[in-house]
Image (cartoon, rainbow, N blue to C red):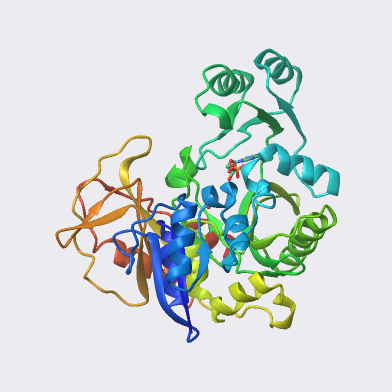
Length: 421
Ligand code: AMP
Ligand code: GLY
């Protein structure tokens, strides 16, 4: 039996820890820094690589990294140098997420289908380009911006405004000092995540995120307001195509370029005319995609994490999934993704309803109370024999939980129901 250190404080980390706790190979699970719902929290921030390494060594831990920031800082490289076991991509491999320009050029030179694009650091040239094209554009900051560095535009006024925000007003700091202008692809979006050991990649279950803050996909983009799994958007033949032409092509092309990609590889896909365009790569699990995926995973997550670290994934069978559907409804604080109140007491967490599980993200504990501490607060996750049942079970649990500025979308999963019919 081994101990595990889960790095991060989101619902993704709570869900992975919850799943790892079911493994008979795992003894104690620590969370750094964790949140108000995770047990065994260690007060070390997720970007304090030295502090985390010291803790992992002293406590004999295999480390599992949730968020992108420590990965892009090179936590895996540092731990590996010290002889510590850690799951995730190296700094070089994580460039697939930490530099959108690097990722776009990588896709272009390796023939991975993605929207056409140009790179700019000069606002005048960017605006000139925006005025010269007759198709709508998306403006993207090169670097990490917590899911907020992408502005989807409808006309050239919006595009010019977005260019100015990034290159002139520097709203995204250094992350926006170089930008991408890419063609807007109008299709259906879904998430395809795989686990890799650098040689082979095994698919996780498919899912669909709900990125916009309001019902019917209105309002600004967020980190994700809810997900369900599996999604009918990705049928079997599309899944095979994405697995071959996106996931395996990426892992093999990286290897050819001298980069071993270990960890979760997340492809944000836009399906248009039956073709899967890659909108973005993440070098980690999605949040909240992780929550329903963990609920549906039948195999032992630790086996796959260990095989990814050891480079022995091909010795394991494909991952098994429960036939049931699962849904995660994110409960946020009103005002997110802009400013929102904090430190409100959450009530009703002790009410248990069938087939549901509450994963915490922006919460903390104080004097026995659970208080809000972030924009996305809880991920209420439930399973059911059908997607309809899973949605019902999730919203039954949602209704038992209250705090003054609780907000959630009321239509999570509905897109899937329409498609199933
Ligand atoms: P990204 O962080 O690159 O995935 O972008 C965030 C969101 O912006 C995506 O999930 C899409 O909803 C949207 N988006 C990004 N790129 C495009 C594109 N080329 N066409 C249409 N929508 C896009
Ligand atoms: N839910 C989208 C992400 O994790 O980036």
